[in-house]
Length: 141
Length: 141
DNA sequence: AATGTAATTGATAATGATTATCATTTTTGA
DNA sequence: TCAAAAATGATAATCATTATCAATTACATT
Image (cartoon, helix red, strand yellow):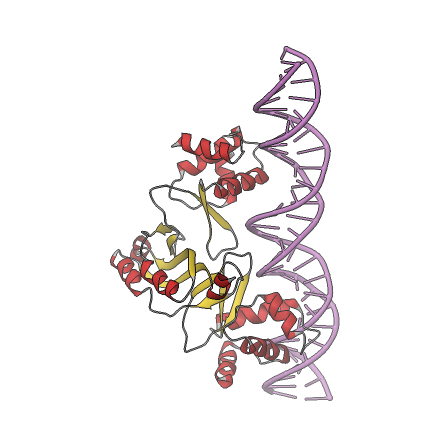
């Protein structure tokens, strides 16, 4: 799977430099989490202390354009990135209003809705569903 | 209905000043549209040429907190505001990727999904669904 | 009507996330 | 080895939004 990513970078015309490798490792180590650029930076600096924030932004942006990462914006003022796991297409999230954690939802839940919209003459390209809730753990306390 | 809004402002401890009146009129004149603060400013300046952007932000923010307006953030870097029409609760949108216009969806489309999540121990508070599509008009050209 | 207090306003500085710029460094291929 | 291209890090610029603050306006009371 690492090989697949390198191929994608190659096809995009991007080299696998040390800093890009480190950033990728951070994303892989936090599979299922949604990280901001700042969060990626501080994690990556443990392995590459001189890494600059500009490189983080550039790298995340490029990897998102190659579908190596997903780029999402919740109702905050900043973007979050997450490893694009081939097995779990999503864009569906539940965000806990208490602890802020973000959970994934299964795909295919929106098929009916999209079918209705297509009948009205739209061509659906993508969608984003975010549900705001209190998660089970926070519900207990 | 204007009366209801004035009562809400009153209860929130806000006076109906000239500038707030003008901003409200802009929002009412564009029922069903989703405006940014800048867009509200430029429309409102036709009636109140000295209006400042800070007042626009403050007013929109307050009206949103009183549920006079809805505040939403699409995948852009800025917020959009829209008149909260009692009859059409929503938070469901279709945004045309070609012309950028935003269309409303009917409520209740998500009930099944939310029910499933509740069964897992979450307490659903709110949700946001945005579908990205090409609208019928743009599809023709 | 005059006055004092609180609310509001507009200009502008400050902030936070992101993007652009640019000189320096690194990589790569002839 | 060397020149050209790509990448990096520091930092300036940008854009939306929020904070600050002095000046204005509105309100309640005399």
